[in-house]
Image 1 (cartoon, rainbow, N blue to C red):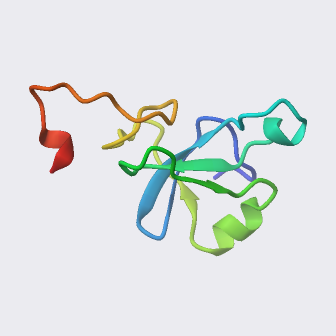
Image 2 (cartoon, rainbow, N blue to C red):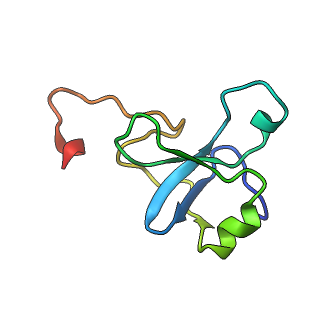
Length: 91
């Protein structure tokens, strides 16, 4: 397991899965990996773990397989677009 977050890292914590995304701003802090976009159908469901990788691990967090596919978000952390003919994402 890595000893720090990196962008695109897929993680799990307390039964939830997500991906580490980039911050929205341009400051040095926004360039620090650790914002997790959780795999939910909410428009924006993030949690800021920047600088807290040790605490994340101590809380039971871990990296998961990079090939993991999420139900609601894509690998960029954006909500998947719903194909009108495929409502299975709502199950």
